[in-house]
Image (cartoon, rainbow, N blue to C red):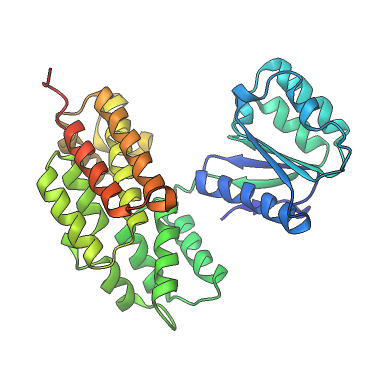
Amino acid sequence: MARKTANDDPLAPVTVAVGQEDLLLDRAVREVVAAARASDADTDVRDLTPDQLQPGTLAELTSPSLFAERKVVVVRNAQDLSADTVKDVKAYLGAPAEEITLVLVHAGGAKGKGLLDAARKVGAREVACPKMTKPADRLAFVRGEFRATGRSATPEACQSLMDAIGSDLRELAAAVSQLVADVEGTIDEAVVGRYYTGRAEASSFTVADRAVEGRAAEALEALRWSLATGVAPVLITSALAQGVRAIGKLSSARGGRPADLARELGMPPWKIDRVRQQMRGWTPEGVSVALRAVAEADAGVKGGGDDPEYALEKAVVAIARAARSRGRG
């Protein structure tokens, strides 16, 4: 899980969230926003990308207000800020405004390191959000998710959940949430088994596998069965996203042995072999179309649409068609 510096006040003048684990970065931002709104329900939140933060923009956002309103300014991908904007941010770090919390989301590494060093020099609160590449780290994450809800899960249950779900933290977190919501008492291996193993035809990964293979009819059948047996729509969209991203990663990677590609792409070797078989028929344009379809479905199942099932069906069909884009003219 994310690690924090000794200064653990979410309302510190400056917070830097550092790393490449998207779920942890998003949670670091949400923690600051939640603390600000708990202090002042009318807190103004500005969430900006580097192209939206031009020279002079930060000064405008942090200028004194007649109403002394609390404000949170979030800067995503701070390592990509222009040199002139970095100068503005560094100047601000030396004299942060009252009632304003600045959150810099930074990937870490060499790019943009000067800004990160400047924030650390002034004592910014830091939340480390490193990519979780080791199984032991992901297992600790799952255990922490259960603890955070006040629920207990056996070590065997946590391991079984990882084995069934995979390495995506968002999907692991969603699975924990579903188990906690649906099951009373201690969650053991048998409970995880009922939900996530021994039901290959009902699994979110079966839906994703059939879709990226271009087998639309089978994917739709697996989707309907999954929904009928209680699989959460958010797990299905997550599996679809993983499947399409894996196609995109492998199609743009250099050739090599599965073991070498596994290290480069952060996938187990067995998955490299599977994705190689699935990616026949895909084109870069097809991957783009499929990713847009997944994004629309994700929004649909999270309240952006009236019918989550239709949103998923539409995405599955779009992905299956994209999987057959090579050779169509």
